[in-house]
Length: 345
Image 1: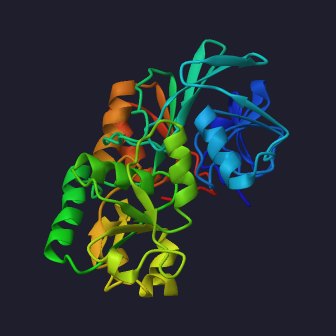
Image 2: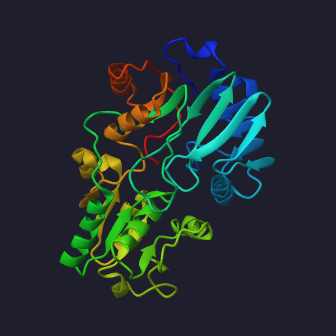
Image 3: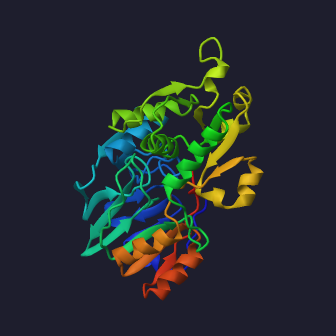
């Protein structure tokens, strides 16, 4: 995998760009490396940021638990939990974590060295999410941000209004099953929790691939209510039981035979990209749900304005528009153009 860097300013500091990703030279550690390394600082548990094969992994306890669930208990030779607000020293670099608001355990990695504070925010969002700690604004000298939805056109609606669309559809079509495509880490649990907040206290049915991480969330204090298996047949529920019910499945299952067995399924897909009608049409989505675990354009700008860094580095996404917006705020910005991180997974 090749990692590109536009410009040369970055390679003159104590953060370097290598093929494996962003290297914190005085700590001899990488942030979210895309290749196996000796020491990895992991922002959150999504597979494009939290890969297996590193010898030493430092992350929040929740992220370590997610990695163990996905890769097995021995996914690294050594792990070091770093809860929010705690710190440790790697050689001459002080490292601590702060909530990123992305998924359970997601963290901004705060690096302090030579009187300079750099924050690698990883993926983050600012919209309400009852399943994880909200983003914490921490002042810094250099802020490293994503730009997944870094275009002015991307303005995500209120999550409660999107969940109301689900409830309205269920009331209008009580004999149809409503199958929601959602990523198994973060998005699925958020939808469940938002449905509970909206007053839905009936069982919510899950595809088998969704169940392990829902259990993990519950072991970390996130109450998701009554969850049932969506398996149909002798070892599962009768088909008629799923009429008028919410069923959550990974996106790949929406076009599989499993979904075809559901009673007259209404296909829903939850993603920030559902704002783009062509994407919804390509997936055969009947009810697009604009629900993202990333900051939209307005929230990206709000975050940078609140943090007020001296410099912004953009890791991945729509870099150019965000760099231009930073310049209008009087903040210099550069694109790192790191490759290997999905837009929304």
